[in-house]
Length: 171
Image (cartoon, rainbow, N blue to C red; front, side, top):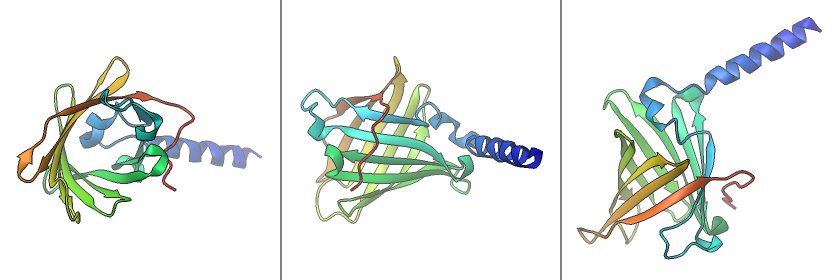
């Protein structure tokens, strides 16, 4: 019996340790381990446009996985974020249910992160995106801007609040 208890305790301590991020990903820690729900930019805050995003540590703290779905699963995607030791940058790939993907770089700032990504595999629409995220008052605040036909469109702003009992629906 003692052996079983010791084995369970050892497993639990290894599992808890496995989720400690590597130092290079520490700037993402305020966002990770939570599920977030968007509140939109004020133009459409309906459930049909709600974005549910789950941020979690992956690969023993060497990566962050974000799974998200919009409109109950009408659109969604998954990102895998990690440190590139050769580039000395936080990089990611974002795959979508719409058939395109993006590659990008995340840069820590004094109060959050900034993201620059390049769209790949799309027949039309934006070719680049840039965005920023920060924590304020327990919410995740963000902005985004898309490059279409060589021109940057107007900024859109949004915020997410932490939610429980909801998960991204990727079906």
